[in-house]
Length: 317
Image 1 (spheres, rainbow, N blue to C red):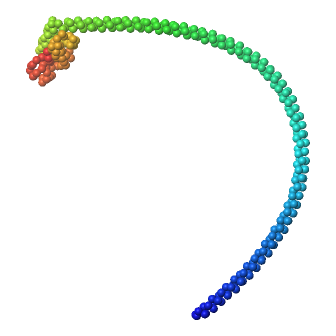
Image 2 (image 1 turned 60 degrees about the vertical axis):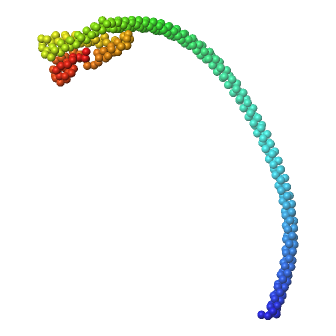
Image 3 (image 1 turned 90 degrees about the horizontal axis):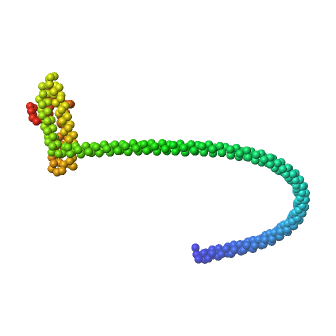
């Protein structure tokens, strides 16, 4: 395509655009005219409607004014009717109140008369009850005073009896304590006398003699008891009783020994050893272990024997 052809085409396009612009301009002018006409019509229409609304409002206001006046007249008539009704009701209420007042006063008078009668009867009844109560209280006080006097007398008697019993009990206790004190003093004196009796040289010599006598009796009993016969059984029994009696005497002597029984410590040490040996278990009591029981025991001890089978020392003296 040549340059001239391109220019011709552009020119045609420009003319086409120009015509289009002119058409648009004409359309715009017509549209503006139509719009102005519509605005004038709308303004006229608004003005017409406003005039109609004002006329309607005026008519409505007149109508409302008439209705308001009619309502006021009606309300005035109703107020007058209500006032007349209230006046009538007030008159009726006043009459009813007057009648009620009269009835109330009559009722009050009747109640006052009844109350006066009731008060008189109540006063009479209260006076009677008060008199009866006073008489009852006087009787109760009299009985209470009598019971109180009896109780006090009984308490005094019981206290006297209790005091007498307490005095008797204390007298018995004092007598018992005195007797116990005398017995205790006598026992202490007996123990002191026994200690003095058994702690002097002569008593120790007598103790040695008793031990020796017990030993000799045991030997004699064992010798006779091995071959006991009906003829010598009584003799053996007497020897056994004497030996047991000597054993009890020896034990009673040494049981009273203590550290205060001897002046020197060495004497007490020796005496303590002797006491332990004499009070040690194993001493034969012939009353429970007669010598003829030893026949069944050939391998152990025979009687009071210690050591081998056929002999040895007798007892632990």
